Amino acid sequence: NAGVTQTPKFQVLKTGQSMTLQCAQDMNHNSMYWYRQDPGMGLRLIYYSASEGTTDKGEVPNGYNVSRLNKREFSLRLESAAPSQTSVYFCASTRTSGTYEQYFGPGTRLTVT
Amino acid sequence: AQSVTQLDSHVSVSEGTPVLLRCNYSSSYSPSLFWYVQHPNKGLQLLLKYTSAATLVKGINGFEAEFKKSETSFHLTKPSAHMSDAAEYFCVVSDLSSNTGKLIFGQGTTLQVKP
Image (cartoon, rainbow over all chains, first blue to last red; front, side, top):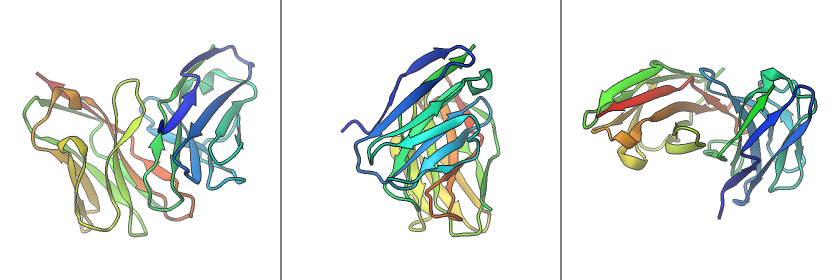
């Protein structure tokens, strides 16, 4: 039982390049989330998927797209990376929307030059 | 609207002394509250959660938190700090205004433990 896994762990992009961050969970959770973490700003929600087949914008969605590929997988795509997207990205999942705790992946450290 | 405020951005204690990390929340609903810990270059790990059962919640590694509705607080405590407790701690409230399971994070408190 690996929990929440993310790939890659590290990535360096040039401005304008694109990439997809992958996330998978093996806990049969319905809801999945993408956050970014910047110094002094806590975690901010980018996009979420309350259930398979649905996605919604969070607090900071601009410059990102997501795909809920199936119940296990939720990917985050940067179409044209910008230096402002330099951050640590975390994927999380929870059993279902409501009062349940979220489980986090180990993060992807992205640098855009 | 729901929000959470961590009152200290940085707390420094000596090993073996008590830890107190302060958190106030605002919620129109009966809140679900969490404390997460993040060690350097790691993901977030759940320490404990409050979901309207007992007001004193015990978590992992000797941490506990008390929900005080009258003070809208959910402070995290530990009787005796360990060097391994040095980390970033986040107080979190569940966004119950929408049925999406979204979490609202505090800004974080960095705990330094001195030998």
